[in-house]
Length: 290
Image 1: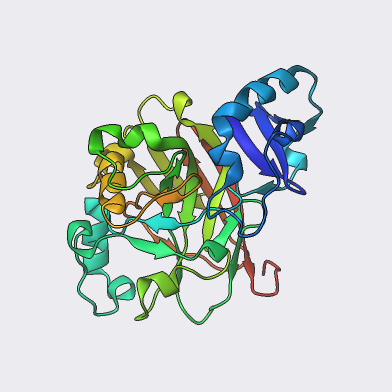
Image 2: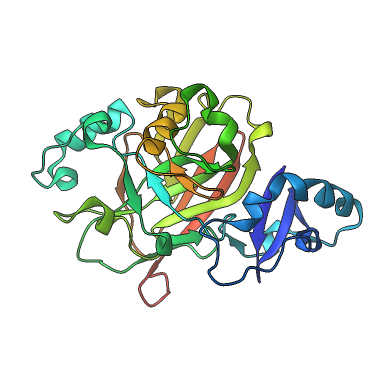
């Protein structure tokens, strides 16, 4: 099942070039009260909501995908967890390019550990990326994102994939510079998630998916998730040895070589097999492409 959020927080099922509006299936979710939950309530309740979505599907109102604004498929992640230098070719790239490392030593993922990206950076693909620091280099980084479905702490490697609700395409946008990684990667709109969430049961092997990113039609990044240094189950076990993960938490699994700069007016095309493709506009800080 491909589940999207669109327009004014509507929830839909993607069917080819159309989206079926199944927002009414969310009625069983209790209205949250203060203190609000620290997780995404749709993802937390997804398994019990799916039968209602299926029941609504035949008669659900439909829209052309081209006519809707796609939001982040997860509205309220408690954490955005990211894996740095998790492809060997990107580690070599980062170590060899001064514009990326800014004179800093680049550690392996086992040495550097994971990092957190601010949830305020989250944005859907239709809105796109806003470049606020045009004096710096701003890079694209395509990543497979695992969306946690059930909570856990100290999750065992052999149980880790069963905690995943689904997968999406992520852009871990990055300002290059000497500042701390989390600061440079937490600019508003610098965590693009989309175009929808594909439920885990539809992804046969998340560690054998082709990734492709181009800018204005020029291919920049091409890889397969089989080349991840630390596999998805390892990342979940590693993360939860330090902190809990909750439904809706996002795990950006790392980017391959080929990262590069984008400017206002560019368009990023990102594709991952089994999930789909998204076209992401790049704008200046006043919201216009130049």
